[in-house]
Every structure is written in C-alpha cells, then in structure tokens.
Image 1 (tube, rainbow, N blue to C red):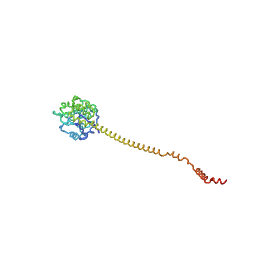
Image 2: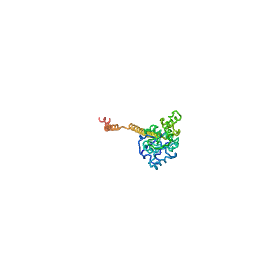
Image 3: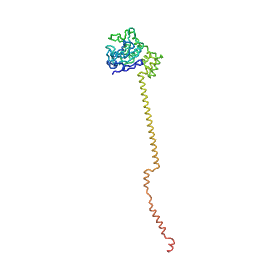
Image 4: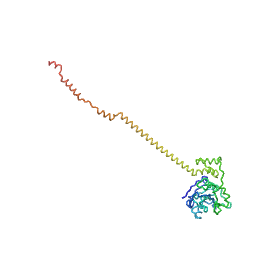
Length: 326
C-alpha cells in the first residue's frame, strides 16, 4: 500500500488527514506514480454548494462515477480547512490524460457567475502550494509558482474548472508576499516560538509562511506543538529520560555490589587477624615436634647411687667396733 504522510506546519490545525476514514480507497486505487513525474499543482472547484462535505464528494466519486476512491489529493473547505484525501503517490482522477503529472487540489464551491473562494480558502490554497514549491524537494519538478495551474489551463482540457473567473482570484494563490521583517513584533514572537517549542531558529521559508498567514500566534503555537518535529523532540526526550533512569538504576546496583565487596573484605581481614592471634599463642607444628624429640633424663643411675650411699650408712662399722677389735 502506498502511504506518504505529510506534516504542513504553516497550516497548523487546518490540515487534517482523512485518508483512512473517507469512503473509497485513498491508497491503492488508481496507480502508483513516482513523484518525479509530477509537474503541476492543479486547482479545481467542486462545482457544488460551498457547504458540501469531503465525505459527500468521496461518495459521489465512488458511487456515481464508479471510481475506487476520491479523485483528488486535497480538498479545501469554506473555512480554509485542508483535507488530505488521496495519497500523493497515486495518480487519482482529476485531469484527463494527465493524472500522473498533477496533484489535484479541489476548493469546495461553484466559482462561476462572479463567485470566488472565501478568503480562508485562498489563504490555505496559497500555503498548501507554497509547502510543495518551497519545502518539499521530492516534487523535483514543482519548484516555482508557474507550477500552479487551473484545471482548464492544462494541455488538452475542455472544461471551465475552476470557474469562469479563475483569472480574477488566481493571483491570490500564486502571489508571493514580501518576506517578513525579522525585527517586527510578529516575526520576533514567531521566532521565539520556534526556539521554545522546536528548539531551533526558524528557517526563512517557515518564518515567512507563519508571519504572512492569517493564523494568530496562539494558533501558530498549537501548530508547532502538534507538529511531527515537536513530537519527535518529545520522543527523544522520553528516550533520554528512560536512559537516565536506567543509568541511575545501574549506579545504585553497582553501589550495592561495591558495599557488599567492602563488607566481605572487612570480614576477611577480621578472619586473618584471628588466625594471626592464634598463631601467637600456639606453638607451630614444627615447634611442637622439636619439643617432643628432646630426650628425657635417665634417673635410674641416680637412684642406684642413692641406694649405695644408704647401704654404706647402715652397714659401715662404727668407731667403737673398730677399737674393740684391736
């Protein structure tokens, strides 16, 4: 399935993607064409009351025309809301024999007999075309305002679309406003919004589109906050916060492990001290062995000598005995 998603900051909340919800097939019907084949931004009118809805147009194309889906890529309502209705990768059906060369932009209303689009429709059409001309390089051949053409201006077309007085309001779409003064209050406010919400200085094209748009600064702020760029920043911030939490958890775990190691080291030091103290008060096995090998003193001769001396004392003749015998 072909699907090219778009984010158009200059349109803010006036850009709505309804490809998945309107009747018919917004993605597969018709054929896929490379964007390098696109040469024109084709402007149409619906030739219907200006309160017609996108769903009603899609139903008409599917049920009355027998098409697989709506024939346009974009539809602009009276209040200026731009609906993305047909994937730009598909050729759709809005310019005979040239569908592969165009992006079809339909403005709701019947612009004949002097009728013209609303101011909101003209401003939104300008911003939509400006986006593709100046900010969408994939459309390599759509690079100037000469690419904007009414349906009837394209080669081989036999129609009054987008109305018999197209030339009277075409300039409201293709005119290029002067670049905004960066020193103006509005320019400075928008520049500050860029810095606070998107974290960067504005590009000249985006600043110009915002400054010259009918959007209030609050609407511009909402546009930036809901933009894909801001959502990407939020995602990156959340990922960074998650990584920081993981690092903190790892640091806490590492601190716990280090404490356990220190406790074990202290326990081992205490055991070593106990062993050393025990060695100080107990003879070593070698000392005990050398002590056990010292010969014991033999006292038998001492006892015999004592007995001889006792015998002499008892049985030696007394002096009287010796005198009498002489």
